[in-house]
Length: 360
Image 1 (cartoon, helix red, strand yellow):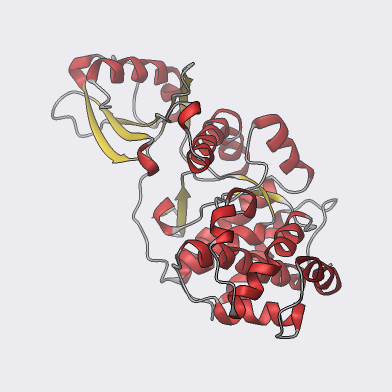
Image 2 (tube, rainbow, N blue to C red):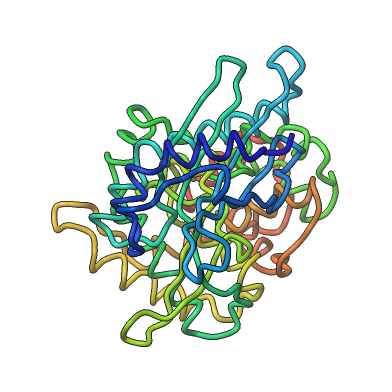
């Protein structure tokens, strides 16, 4: 379904009050009509559940134009939704909740570069429209230390701002994901069932529930981004010449240990594991600087253990779905070795007992 000029004009006018507040471009004399806007389709959403559009506002030939990104979600009727469809539809509802209830505070109080929400609209049929500012910057390969540090700093800001009991409040009161990330075991039973049953992946399959439960009871809890891949990042330099990052796509933002974001980022976006220690130490320092004194401050060893388990958790998903990012075989084997000594245990319960013994 294409966003026509008439509908785009209506949405742009709904955005105008907050556009006045949020942009550095002059808006006092801005009159939005069908004659001075253009609409471009940017991309189709995952599973065909809608589209992203760019509304550009301004007279023909003007150098400075206002831009509004419109994310329009069109899920199938609930009675026709598969298990996977429901997961995706719920994720878009979470994203609307994030922009409606959480984003502005993170921008204003915690200096996080994310799209500014202008207007959110929901229909009785389940359609959702999110209008927001357009992030600018360049895509990155994350080959430079500056880009990697920029993302880890961004994560430290998000995680510290939502640390501890705040995460539960954002889930219960603001509608974020009860469990952050798109691959957690509760929503991926088919992938778990599809895992190989032999070798180290067979051992990981049997240990999967113990790993999932341990991450859920981790002492470190916050709200994570949940899909921190390079495709969701744009890099730019601030006025000091420092590399910074803006991030978008908050469908899977919710409660989890910070290690879940870190493991996914290192595997998928950075794409190598040799630099883990240096990058984790940088993140750990930034996190501790931002956590209030009355909050639980994790040791570096706690963070390392949690990241090792999060790597195993992500590999569990990939073993049933398909591998991408860097090879996690060695890391997973080292963690499994702590649990079973290299020999598959007899049951899931034995892996639970081993988890309590080794990781608490």
